[in-house]
Amino acid sequence: MVILTECDIELAVHEVYRPTSAAGGASACRSAQSAARARAPDWVCEILSSSNAATDQVDKFRVYGASGVPFFYWIIDPERKILTVYRFDGGQYQSRFRPSRARP
Image (cartoon, rainbow, N blue to C red; front, side):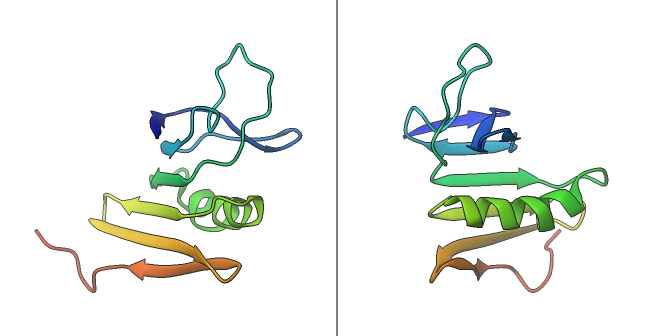
């Protein structure tokens, strides 16, 4: 298992995404020099910011699920201090962990 940060993931032709972190086999992420299509990673983590929250929570959520990110999608909201963990189950992401309130 390889964990990479800020790597390009090409989930379909001309559909390249750059999650905060991703993990999977060595081919889960591609280097800037490689034109080879990478397979979907096993795990993706996104850290929200005001400029990307909607993209990470709606667009990427849909794309990662449709493209076969098979295990986990984590969304970290540092402003609210919340980690939401989704697991791909039954053809869609199911929430597996989300604290009811942030702790100091």
